Length: 118
Length: 109
Image 1 (tube, each protein chain N blue to C red):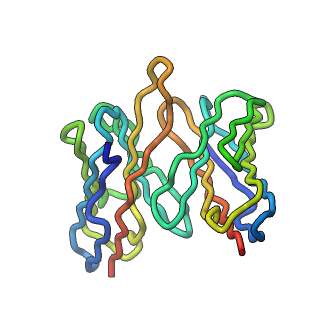
Image 2: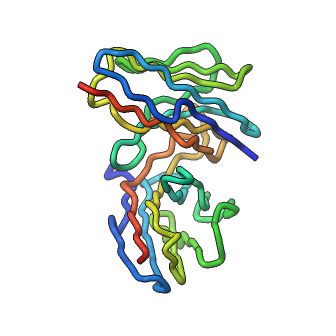
């Protein structure tokens, strides 16, 4: 399996512009997570989905942030309008739902998108 | 609010030294504790612990969980420069994880 795939790897944009980050989870995984990582705040959970349905978006910082998962193999995180304080590395991760003896809770991370808002 | 605290924040050692990284947690409906290693890219999975007192080992790395005292340790023996990374601890319920801020380990030759 190719693992979790994120695009783009790097994004540089100007304040006020719309930014869309993309994620393809590992095939067969039920859960998809969006994280943001900064030096100041570490790794923060923004939102997560189960079977394409958003379960908890309490980590989404503001209404400028939105996330969708139209199908099991694709999710987007959108920031509109972007601000310099949104500059961070955004990670997507996926995992299997607890079932039987299968490993639970292990989240596999994509390579991340480094966002710079000027 | 769920909380995971790691210590020390950073650590500098020489090759061959043994290090112990600490992680304490307060998580509602705790199910498991995970350790990840993060170099200049994405976190990669190391261990998952669900039961107290059972040590997990992988080569020079080992980890143990104490569910009574709500902490875990990660030991690395005979450290190598390739062990230099941020080590993240995460504790979670059945569905989501709360991450600590990490321990930055630097191993000097």
